[in-house]
Image 1 (cartoon, rainbow, N blue to C red):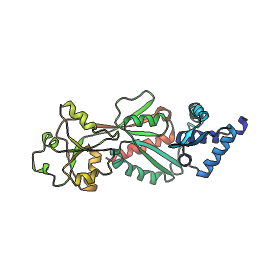
Image 2 (cartoon, rainbow, N blue to C red; image 1 turned 60 degrees about the vertical axis):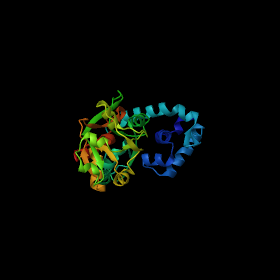
Image 3 (cartoon, rainbow, N blue to C red; image 1 turned 90 degrees about the horizontal axis):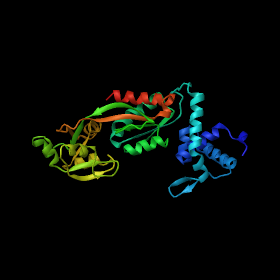
Image 4 (cartoon, rainbow, N blue to C red; image 1 turned 120 degrees about the vertical axis):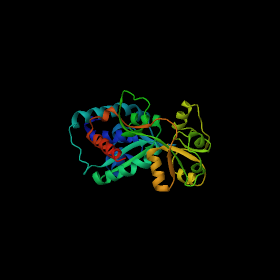
Length: 301
């Protein structure tokens, strides 16, 4: 291969294609059309004399050649872009591309609508991609450059990640209007006497509230466990189940679905939400702007 025939733009396209393994998503990230990305992939295949991406059982798969150059290519481009373009200003009014976030489902209810509103007003050429993820998945997504930023509860911060505290939330019991618990003394004994609806991104039958209960040598009965909040309002309104969620999610259920929320009658502390990103994006102007928008959203809560 003659290096003179390989330009920087093709290398950038290759890097994003290897990460996304999808022509359409790669085009969205780069702000280019699907035919343009497909044409670039054809040129790369000719120049490198390799298919690079082929059809697999679950979408596109990398060839051994593509897998081998994945890490070195990404590191080289990151170093080159950081060294050359670090001082280039970011103008949200004319910016294009996709902001990629991960967060637990509980946060999408309250955070995504106001964040999307800000993006549409301030950066109308951009779009938003949100992946639902538990803590470990969120960290993996950052390491693999599948997301730009993660929101959620962080146990320990790896050295190659940065984190900023956003909010500490109390836990609330959420149940239907007219629930029999409203006719009795509202304490932890009465809360635990009813069946519970548990939401866990991992698919387990326990969530953070169960860990906190265990510190008090208490436990609850999980009648139903789901992995997201889609059916939660309907199931709570049609039963005597109780859900225990953070303040922001509970307020959405109260305002949008007419459910009742009452603070958990037990000292379990607050659930911290942090904003987490890879150190490689510390000085990236576009990334810095995104972080400011998220902080502005949280100031409104």
